[in-house]
Length: 249
Image 1: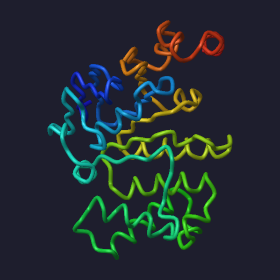
Image 2 (image 1 turned 120 degrees about the horizontal axis):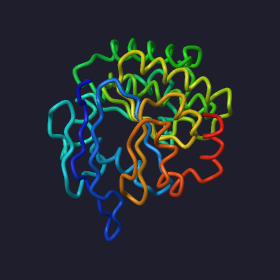
Image 3 (image 1 turned 45 degrees about the horizontal axis):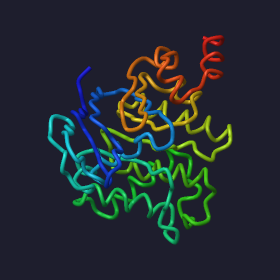
Image 4 (image 1 turned 180 degrees about the vertical axis):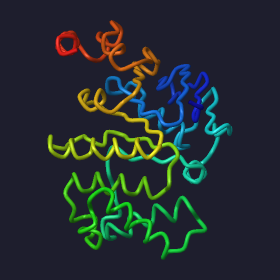
């Protein structure tokens, strides 16, 4: 397995607050990495640092052998870094198709509108929104808007895809559908980093788990090992979850 992303001693401060503190992490091509931890642990900040939304205060970020510590968001998109956002905010008046086509054009500036729309149709079909392609995004249900967000991220042709709480607010049938899509994406060879609170999904999908707490990396390893780690149980999972997991394992 070859490395696709490396964070070396990355910190990010907001005024006096240390959102990330000296985080070092390596991700290999083809991995599905679960990024978990309590609210405020620094998970979304880590994604923002990698994708150029809020650059690191110190440390370095390397993607596919290239230093991207100071890249802008449009540059990271063109390099093959893509993400979904926890709060989905599509262009409400635009059709689902044009929302996805806009993402394709943003990440590949030389693409024609015609080819961007073709790509958009493919991605909408993949996420099961083919029938809604001409509907304004404002008319879609939350579950559909989440899938639209995924289609937009995929239209950017990512090598590495960050999924930020793609299952938040979904019912169990919708979560199952989203989980199947993630399995398909992983099988296609895209490297995935998932921020996810549903441990059932994390254990079903992820090949490795990293845990953040108060901006620090407190665990990194195989899912079954990480959920038994006393520091992770104390900071995030709680004794009841750990006992249940152990009895099912």
